[in-house]
Image (cartoon, rainbow, N blue to C red; front, side, top):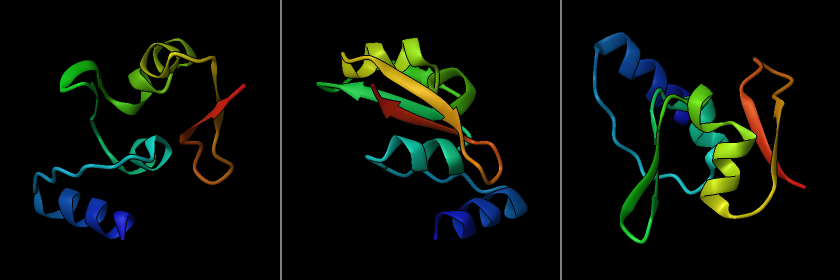
Length: 80
């Protein structure tokens, strides 16, 4: 479903706003990410900017790591 939404958005020049709680899915299909805590923006940018171990550690308050997805290379986060 997210792949279809992404494709249609790019083909038709549409803006899509979605709330996703799975950061890995968001990084794989979204052009821009915004992380909120208690209603405040704590990080925003493209997946390449947000999907960094240090940024994710700041967002979640725990050590995080990043690996490339085997299909397409999108960044995938994990907890140490």
